[in-house]
Length: 59
Image (cartoon, rainbow, N blue to C red):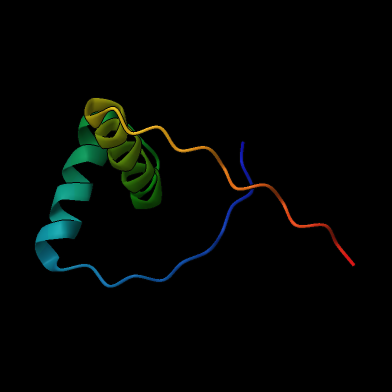
C-alpha cells in the first residue's frame, strides 16, 4: 500500500449519508474505507490513472 497521508475535510450531512450507504452496501469497516472505495471506483470508471509521486530523500 502507498504511504498514507492524513487530511481533514468537512463533509455535508448528505455526503456522510452517501458514505454510510456505500459502507453498508459493501461491508467496509469505516467511512474512510468507503471514501477510498468511492474515489478509486470513480477513478476506474473515468479511466483516471495516477502514478504516485516519487518519495523525497531524507536528509
